[in-house]
Length: 109
Length: 109
DNA sequence: TATACCTATGTAGCAGGCTACTTGACTAGC
DNA sequence: GCTAGTCAAGTAGCCTGCTACATAGGTATA
Image 1 (cartoon, rainbow over the protein chains, first blue to last red):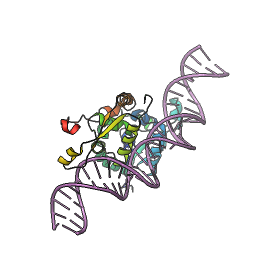
Image 2: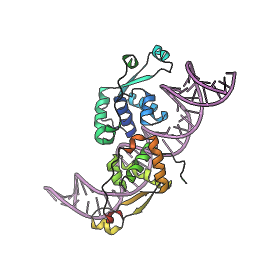
Image 3: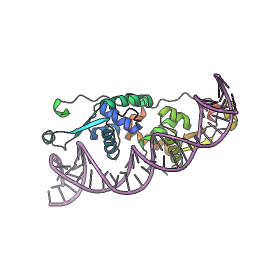
Image 4: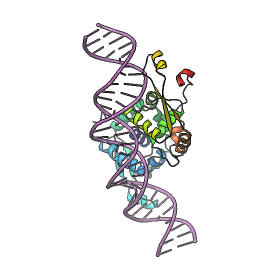
C-alpha cells in the first residue's frame, strides 16, 4: 500500500501543505505559489495513490459564506509515512510551511 | 534580454542555489535533493536563456584534487533580476537555501 | 447590464522534471 | 582482476508541471 511511492518536490510540498492545515486546493495554491494547473492535477494523483483523501464541503456552508464549495483533503496513514520519508530527501521543506490557524468545526466538515 | 522570463519553482531553486554559492551541478544536486536528470538539463536551459553562464574548471585543479573537472556557473545580471522577481512568487525559497562557505581562490577559477 | 474582480475547481497541450542508465576516472577490498 | 563505491556530467523516454483558458456564482461599480 504505497510503501515505495517516491514524491516529486512539488508533490511533497503539496502534501506538506495539506498536513500543515492548508486543506483545500485554493489555499494550497496561495501558500505555495503554485498555479492551479499544477495543484489540482497533482492532488488528483495523490488521491489516486491513496496518500490523501477528499470530500466535498456541504453546499449549505458554502452558501452561507457566499463562495464556491471547497473540496477538503486530509492525509491517509500512507500519506503521513510517505511525507515523513520525503523529509529526508527534501529537508528544506519541513521548516518552510507554517502551521495554519486551526479552523472552526464547521469549516472542517 | 530575458526580461519577461518566468521561472518554474525548480528553476528558481537552482538559480537561488547557484547564487548562494552552490556553483556547480553536483553541489546543486546535493543541496536541493534534486536528481541529475533534473539539474543538468535545467542548467542548460538557464544558460540558453542567459540567466547563468558557465566555464570548465582548469583540468590541473581537478587532477590535483583527484576528481572529475567541474563546470562552474554564475548568475548574469539578467539572472539576478529574474531571481529577485521570482522571490515575490516563491517567498519560501529565500530563507531556504543557506549561503555557502566562501571558497578558496583556486576553486573558484 | 456590462465590465471587472474574487473564490474555487478544473482541463488541453506543450514544456519541463524524473527514473534509470551511461561514461569515465579514481579508490578500496578481497 | 572483480566488484563496489565516490565524484562529476550527461541523456532517452515517460510522467509531471505550467500556461492559458473555461466554468460558475458572488460582489462591486459605473
